[in-house]
Length: 85
Image 1: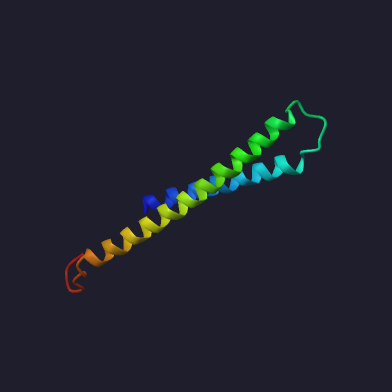
Image 2: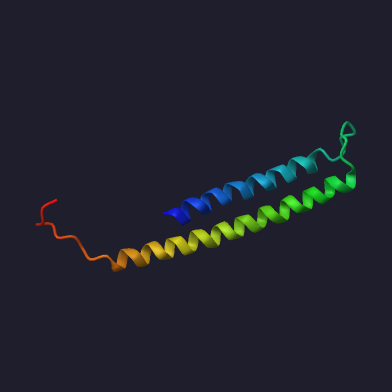
């Protein structure tokens, strides 16, 4: 379950980075800023690339955790319903 929680968090962070890149892109013609156009484009590209990489890594991590969880379920012996709990 730890791998799934980590993958969810990475997916959220990756999505947020893509959202930040979109916000930078949508305000690219704003003249009331101290950021140069080259720096703005550089950050947009950086945030999109890192966001996509995090989303891909999160999906792979989630898939591996899901597979490990299924394998663990198969290995556990079934509980005896007549035993004391």
